[in-house]
Length: 333
Ligand SMILES: NC(=O)c1ccc[n+]([C@@H]2O[C@H](COP(=O)([O-])OP(=O)(O)OC[C@H]3O[C@@H](n4cnc5c(N)ncnc54)[C@H](O)[C@@H]3O)[C@@H](O)[C@H]2O)c1
Image (cartoon, rainbow, N blue to C red; front, side, top):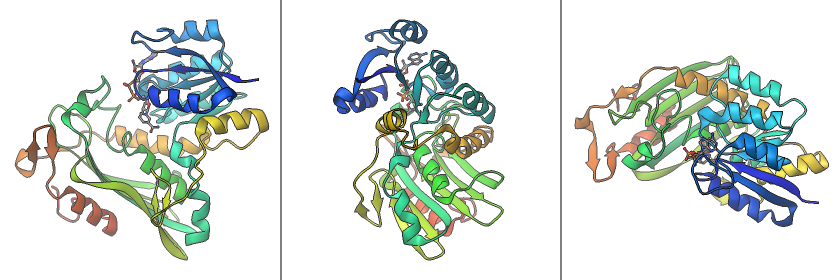
C-alpha cells in the first residue's frame, strides 16, 4: 500500500519536492498540496491535516515558520520531512525534539545522503579539519524574492545558501559544541541586513577545526567544495554533485525515500533532528552576531543586476587555504 504524502509550502522550493514525490512512483500517493498563495489544494495547513490525514508531510515553508507548522504536523500524528534549517535556535530545537518523540522526523540537509561521506574515513583517516571555499553570484533580485530574504535573524549567506556546505563540514569533522567560534561578516547592499560574504572559524577543544570562506558577490564561480584533512591524507569533497577528489560517486539516497525506508523497514534515518543540532547551535550564534560590516561602494563593482567584489574568488580561495579571516589577510577591512 502506498504511503500518503502532503506538501506544505508548495510554490517555492516545494516544486523540487513535488518532483521528488513524483519520482517515487507508486510508493507514495500525494494527497494534498498547501500554500498560503492561491493555486493549491489548501491555504490552511491545519485544515489540510485534519481533512486529509496524511501519513507523511513535507514542510518547505520559510525557516521562521518551521516550528509552529512542524508542531501541528507532528501533533496531527504524521511523520515529517522538514526543510533545512529546521529551526533557528537551540530552544526551538529542544521543543521540536520533544514534540517529535514517537514520530519520524527527517531534516532536509540532502547532501547528508551523499555516498561520499562513508568513503572519507578510508581515504583520509581520522578527520582533523574541513575547509570550505565558495564564491557564487546572486543578483539584487535574490534579496527581494521573499519577505525573509536578507532579514536580520532569518537569513544570511552562511545559514541559508551555504547551509549545506556548513552542515557537511560539521558532519565530516564531527564537531559539536563547546567550540570556539570566530566570524568575519560583510554585506554589500545597505538594504540587506545580513552577510553576503563571510569567513567562519570553529575550533573544538581537541583541535579539530572547520573553516568557511564564502561570498555571493563573485563573477567567477567557486562551487563550495570542502577540503578535508585527516591524519592519513586529504580529500576534496564536492557536496553538491557527490564528487570525491574530482570523481562523481553515484548512489545518493533521497531523504524522502530514506524516511519511507525507515518507516517501513527500520533502515536508519540519515538526517534525524539530533544530527543537525550543531548546525542550529552555529546558526543561533551567527544570527545573533550583530550587523555585518557594510563594505564601501568604492571597493565594489556595480553590475546591471547586482554587486560584485572584484577578485572575490581569489580571496575566498586564499582565505580557505590559509584558514584565515578576510580581515586577517588584509583583503577586506
Ligand atoms: N534543501 C535545499 O537545497 C533547499 C533549497 C531552497 C530552499 N530550501 C528551504 O526550503 C524552505 C522554503 O524556501 P523557499 O525559498 O521556497 O521560500 P519561500 O519564501 O519561497 O517560501 C516557500 C513557500 O512557503 C509558502 N508559505 C509561507 N508560509 C506558509 C504557511 N504558513 N503555510 C503554507 N505555505 C506557506 C510561501 O507562500 C511560499 O510559496 C526554506 O526552509 C529554505 O531554506 C532548501
